[in-house]
Image 1 (tube, one colour):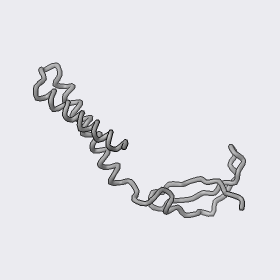
Image 2 (cartoon, helix red, strand yellow):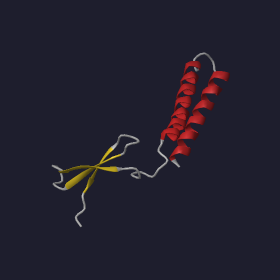
Image 3 (cartoon, helix red, strand yellow):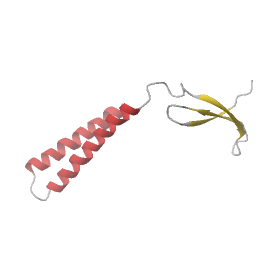
Image 4 (tube, one colour):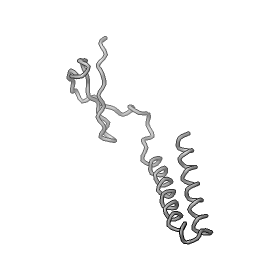
Amino acid sequence: MLRIAVTALGVVLLAAGAILLAGGRGVFRPFGIQLLIFGALVLLGIVFERRYRGAAAPGASLQQTGERFVDPTSGKLTEVLYDPKTGERVYREVMNG
């Protein structure tokens, strides 16, 4: 839903910039150029976000590192997980059981 709203915003910005450039006087011309550039950046951001977003569910490729420590904030035993695709490290509380 958010992606659709941001895409719509990018399209509206591009359209508004094109309208200002096509029919605007000299005063509105720089504003039209700015709208075109910002709209293009928003749409490019959506395209690249979609391209580089992982296809797997979050946490699907996490591997245990064997690292465990007591979290100084919560005082609970915490383990470290590692995602080799992204390099992300995730800290998760160890459940007793």
